[in-house]
Image 1 (cartoon, one colour):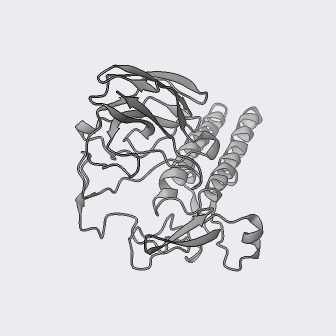
Image 2 (cartoon, helix red, strand yellow):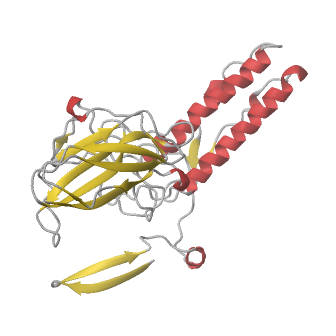
Image 3 (cartoon, helix red, strand yellow):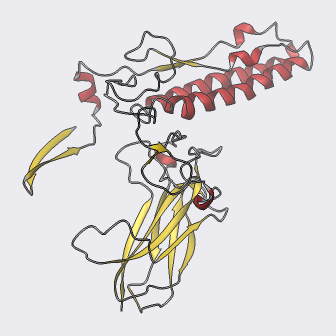
Length: 337
């Protein structure tokens, strides 16, 4: 990572080029490099009775699947170092892995049970643990003690000021659109880089009249538009982000148009936009598609800014696997006269 410091408007401004990511050469030469934690799971094969020949093929196939699941979880763990709070690994990696293992172990028991007594107690082998984490004793605490501040490093060598609302002076968030609240909902599942949602405004007018309706065309990719918890009914920031079976974000996207008072300074964020809609149409997927948005018109002459952005089921912009991935948003400016 390269950091430059410039003097702007009487203050030092730091630009972190690379956003904390280091090259392989830098990692290998850094004596303080962090160890990568590892997921270990109980051996299922060692706990099975003698497998009848008639069930052996299916059992071996599912045992191999268990090993593949562990490998995939460890790859995901290695690619997510530094993401989320102490509950991230439990919610986004260990929890889903345990669910997959329960289903696979159950198939093994069923296969044996067709031709011999069905083995019992195998479900106890579904839960895995994290080992060799920096800053602990090598046991599987699965994400730290959950406390904020006071020098807690969350097991990643960084000073974490807070990762939950235990020490917050603000009231708990209740799912409605109210500020000055603290949100304890876990962020949830984060897809791999290739599956991160993206979108683009592909068609828009350069100029429209006052109160003249117009159309925007929006293309989305890797966004399954099937999840929307109404904010007006308490669905705001209350559900963790979810991926479908293909690892794609479940959610929707928003479209908003507002009038800009100036194109020289950042706009006031408080006023409601002149137009807003959330699109949950059951479409979307890995391949890019097109959605038409009918805008009712803008109320005055000037420059309108129309923006689109992806949201998970509880309206948060989906988090990226990497810090340097562009999030799923786009904006255009339209002359209104």
